[in-house]
Amino acid sequence: MAEEARARPRRLGTARVGTSGWTYPNWRGTFYPKGLKQADWLAWYAGRFDTVELNASFYRLPGPAMVARWAEIAPPGFLFAVKASRLLTHERRLAGCAEPLATFLERLAPLGDKLGPILFQLPPNLRPDLPLLESFLAGLPPSLRCAFEFREPGWWTDPVLRLLDRADAAFVSFELAELRSPRIATGSLAYVRLHGHERRYRGSYPERALADWARWLEAERGNGRDVLVYFDNTAEADDAVRNALSLRRLLGHDPAG
Image (tube, rainbow, N blue to C red):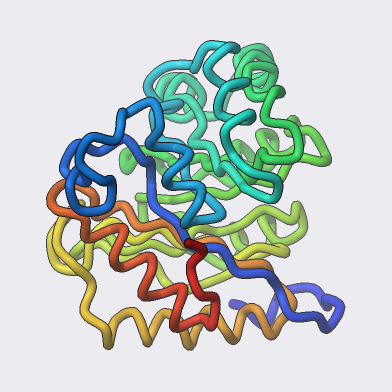
């Protein structure tokens, strides 16, 4: 499937690794120092990572003042990947989305150049529909970087991958315990979500599993693709943080701070 990808300039892609969100009370006293106010958590996080995946936006639109505050706190070069509203993916199911999509993107505008890809996580009961996806892609702003996580395996086909590649949209490779997509990259971005190696949203990734991902990611960087990886095993302890730091080291990118 990857052989269908269009030719790209030979450059080494960038690599960023982070977590899905940063406001986890179970990180207090391990990743976040005891006594650090929650209002200061993003600044602490952004001093150690250069990207985060914002998931709260799936449930409700953040207020303009909040988005502007995030942009102010995050240092130059920091990147927010943002999960699209469930109104688009789970309620409208990619159909008739022009108005709510415009509202969603307008709300994110204060992030400026700190806005990374928009993540569209499709529900597992959305059956493959190539014309639907093609129409949705055609309605996206040309400059918008986007990624699609298909929970229904029927989407993992060559026609879908070719469509994403032509649109420079990323196929999200993911692990959700027993449910695992193929490792595939489309467009100019390799986007990976690691929700849990053996248990959903919890448990630490063993070093051998991280090393295996690092080899694949390095190959994609060698193909000229940028790499984004987010750990979503956030339900207990600080496994996501520790795994993210470990993968950064394996990719030769020592964490800041």
